[in-house]
Image 1 (cartoon, rainbow, N blue to C red):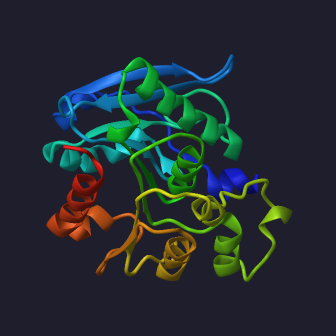
Image 2 (cartoon, rainbow, N blue to C red):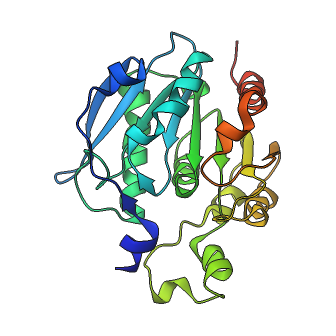
Length: 251
């Protein structure tokens, strides 16, 4: 009950012509993860040899709620594969921490093995809860780099802030311990955070950054809350992304 209330908050799918509404070349992808779960995603191809983000979204909504942001990335020549976790949008199954990791790993394997994308062109992107998911993929698969936005060190760190230190394990069987994951990683990392984030305070994002090894970058978007970072950041935000991608993706 607590996991479904506080951690996993999927929105029902709305059947609309999202490609026409967004103006994006949305290629539908259906990935069988196991006998029960099939994951739905969109591949948005900006062209051969372009950087590709494997996008792990936050704990609420579904892929259709990220289209405006994907438009901005596509316009800058960045390809995106975004997928819905099990139980989100059109994906089947019931959300769980291990299940989300399995869905993301299946999405990675699809890009590498079916689309023949080199890991040197692939960047993992995780927003909020998705940062922990992207971190798990980075721990298990090769990739050019990792970008996390609005990230937190662990569910317990969030409980320490919002629930006066109540042990999260008493209520939820989830950890999403990103800080532990990044301590074991040695790859380029960009940590982005909204200055005024009231859901995941800036100090928690800083803990993720401090737990990681070099090479790493810390970027704060002035005036941004939790869900409006790319829109408040505007051109400066996308220039920061561009600079990071150009640094790690071979020409």
